[in-house]
Length: 237
Ligand SMILES: Nc1ncnc2c1ncn2[C@@H]1O[C@H](COP(=O)(O)OP(=O)(O)OP(=O)(O)O)[C@@H](O)[C@H]1O
Image (cartoon, rainbow, N blue to C red; front, side, top):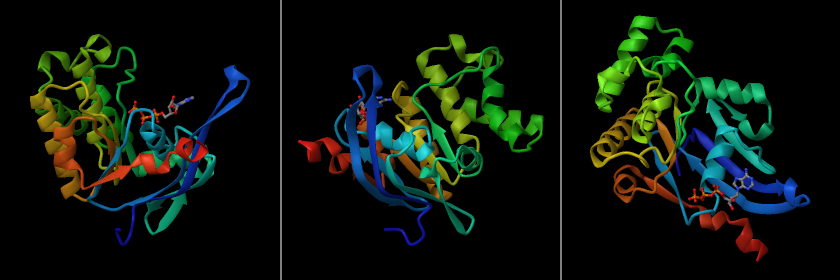
């Protein structure tokens, strides 16, 4: 276990309330506990529907937790993202936790280059330098230059995903969450993304991810977290 974890998930539980089914409670995970340190890539493993995406979404603050703590190291202090304070969640997303979702939520009419450059502009970088870095990443991911000036709405699934990856990788968040980033990519681009992940790890980024692609997983994972061990349904059965 790392000495000074960047992320510490403690005794987290989550169930969903199905309002359309008379408020039925659907337990998903309980007693979720793990730590993540600099330069580690922990991969959430286990069968479909076991709760991998739910854990990733709780760590990003998209899903509320029923119980437990999600401690995120910020400077010398640990902030509890599970406290439910939306301002804290927004601050941690700005400074500390990046996230690459499975699908790009493209803002209409914003060209691909600016979708990628935007997080750098928000952090005070000048427009020329932000666009230069965005273009370098898009070139590396083999997005045709003719697409840089177009909004990604009409792009193919793999093109959208490459814009999404570039946007998530262009900043230097200490913690990076990856939800199947290579799912819609061809072998060459999967290889490129695996290389980008390895570079982040070498620079000390802590990565928590879901990778169904076994080649990529075997290459980047430093540890597998078996989510079946946290299944609340097994306990309920
Ligand atoms: N917003 C939600 N409302 C109700 N149930 C949900 C919600 N999100 C997830 N679930 C349920 O929680 C369980 C875990 O789902 P989750 O997506 O976390 O699994 P997963 O391990 O990531 O699966 P997969 O590998 O198929 O993506 C599933 O039974 C799912 O139906």
